[in-house]
Image: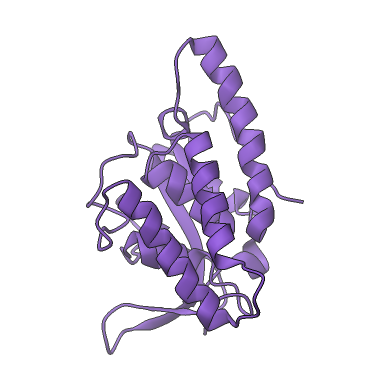
Amino acid sequence: DGGDTRCFSQLLILEELMYRLEYDHGRPIRPCEFFHSITGVGAAGVITILLGVLGMTTSEATEAFIGICGKVFTADACDDRLRSERLVLATKDVLDKLDVPHTTRLAGDIDRSAGCHVSICYSSASISGCRMFRNYKSKRSSYNPTIIEAVRASWATPGLFSSVFIGAAPQQEEIISAVNGFNNPTLQAVQEARELYGANRAVSTLLSLGSG
């Protein structure tokens, strides 16, 4: 779920779950190695990218997310444009630490996810509804943004961050976060799983992490 800086609580819950899994399996386990699919929106979409696309452990993602929030939400007054610029710079810092080029796209350019399917919710600024960025092929068409663009779009909550323009002219589209209307993307996650694995495939675990 979305929740801006409060999404830190989701990482604490996930950390406890991963600790128990590691205890049972007797070895370290990254979330991308355990979960076949992860869907996120808003700030949780950023966390989804850290865990599922960049393949971080829960503790690594927690450190990265806290670092991003610390650089974006500072004590000085700033508008959505400046906050967005800070988010881009903070994301670049995360990529630099992993030696991941800034131009790396969500799908096809990086192999750190251990096969985890990642979907990030977003909305068009002009048409309501929830759409997806994906790091995998789907029968539904979607953009393949850079990781930086995906982070910006996922967290582009009106009033907090500026919108994002993605695509080449004249088909360029203005994109915002899907948190206003789809703050709990459980249904979207289930729909993605049905398309990935088939409607008759049994679900072992469905974990919904909120920030309320």
